[in-house]
Image (cartoon, rainbow over all chains, first blue to last red; front, side, top):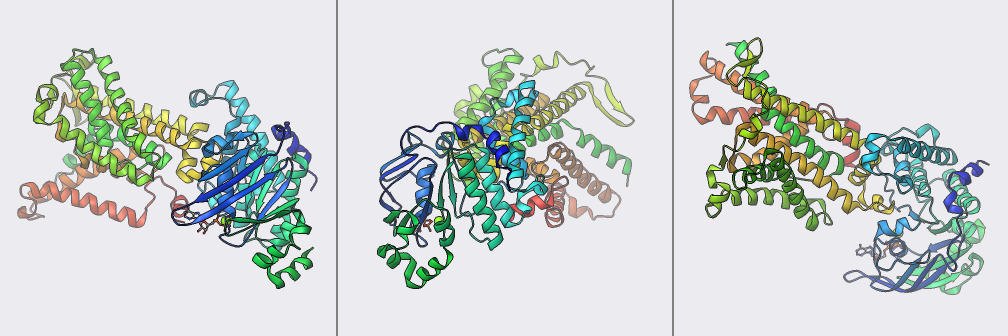
Length: 282
Length: 331
Ligand SMILES: Nc1ncnc2c1ncn2[C@@H]1O[C@H](COP(=O)(O)OP(=O)(O)O)[C@@H](O)[C@H]1O
Ligand SMILES: [Mg+2]
């Protein structure tokens, strides 16, 4: 599929220069819930245009780390910088506006709205008018709606979901919903994209499609991506760097080829037999 | 049985000022619940605070009618802020609890003995609406209408004003809900966390929705009090909120015309139940003992309640609703 070029044109602000330095800096971040310490003194940096993966067993704190980046949770201690902003105490909608988009582990779409409306909601930050003007349908409003509609159509084409355009999202098959959620995040024209288990529950073909979308987004748009994933084959194939968590702590942070030979990782997570599988998928 | 009387009364009930008032208040509730997912169980509180706002500013401070109306609506804005600030960051049920309590606190405060000089205690406030009837183009002593469906001039005036407002606010909400602003409200109804992740300040949008729907409730209260030429505290008691909910659910939640349809249907059904019972009793079909005294009044509500239960069983989405959407919401 070579229609990535129109997408680049449709989402120009993904191309804008990033602030100097890493896109994400987590500095000694701890997150405690009553009784549970989900994240313990975690530090890492994500470089511009990097495809950064977070792996670890269930309950290791992967989603919690995402929620710290996107502001759903605020660190109990430590600090978090995203795209040059100190987001340690910022709210989710404020962080989103700095150029951070995300998908959720359990799809969170607007089920009773159409695919196009879901994607248009991702564009809202790029509409520069209020409800009053929108009611009166001024020329500027119409132009903005048309322009945003074009961006949405480019994303619909890219994700190959043309035939579902006007369907209510809640009625669509799971695999398509996963794509729509990715599309909604893309519509925000993000500089940082957080993907929480983008291929969970997908068959081989759907997984391959999704992998291609993710690579295209990184390569063509230059969006920095952090991906949480269980599918080790996918992680080892796609990721530039892998952060391995266990019980909320970092046990490895390196390129895939090094991580998969790390004794601590093998012991804590992969296990002897999984290791063989891992070699097989390479 | 005199069917002409039955149907004439049903039509009069369907177009009555009460039906218009319920329609306007239900449009507000539709903004809250139908489009934003806010559970407001105290819509009558918005109605009463605005009605009292008008009554008090005219009788106590001699405000002109137009200014009194503005003050009344501002009172509803104030109430929305008061209720929203502490609850809209919390789960949806907190707003539900706080609104129902607030509507009772407002009623009991206005009817309290300590404030009698100001808000008239249990008698309420009378004789403040004359300034509004100055603009009445109809002759109060003449009955207007078609055939045997007739109302006197003052009634005709308030009915026309009420229904004009009901249609206008319906159109306003229609325009708002098809705008990007309305799209955001609906996204918050569907999934607040996702809306935040898209950069929407869900709290502020919910506040705007609470204010808009509350002001529409206030408008309904003003129409009611002006139409009755009096504000009486016990007119604004909790059942009114639930009748307005009934009207909304009857029409179908989250549909543009359902408040108007539901309000008309609610009042017509109530009138039909009443009149059919009356006539059947007079004709000896129903034993007089069944409908004697207050029982007749209670029975009509039982019939309406039974009808609503049947509606929920066979058409839970209401008359205009979309069954698919109902099913999705359950997942
Ligand atoms: N909101 C919460 N309240 C209490 N405990 C939580 C909450 N969210 C996550 N946890 C706990 O934090 C730990 C890490 O969870 P999570 O980040 O979801 O793991 P992962 O995504 O790696 O499977 C788990 O023990 C989980 O039970
Ligand atoms: Mg998780």
